[in-house]
Length: 206
Image: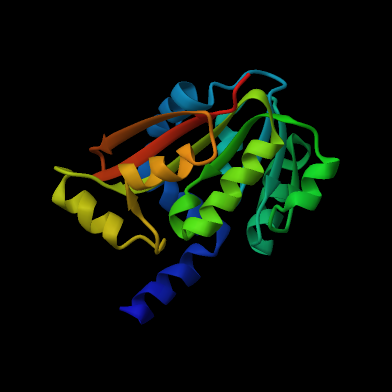
């Protein structure tokens, strides 16, 4: 099983394959609905994308002030090539030193990131996001989730995810409430290819 997992990781490290896989799993309609219901973008919105990957979310956003951070050189190169001046991209892990020179943001994104992190790492990402946000700013997350009554195929696929820290709804929400003043949590079941996601909107007091 470790060899299979390593093979999948290697394949998904290619930006184009990763993008195609994400669209297959989520569909463009699903992404549009997620953006409309949770990110709620507007022109000029300040967006910090933590673990941005190839920054595919920009396909679904208007002209925003976007900064994306990712440790994968190939993902960042692909994002720069595809989106150019639509965003500013950093091939590094976001840390406190970066926040000194960055503006405050309306929204921080951690899309498909938290389930790859242990509790300490996830808490640190949420803390960084809170520090980066304006009063009233929001951290938006989406991750696979284990949920009672979910489709058995969805449960199987979630168990096979590359992330080693997939949680249930309570697990994600507990992490968020340790850092944020207000947390909205929603679990959605996808039917195209059965899958289950946990979305969170974590808001800084205004």
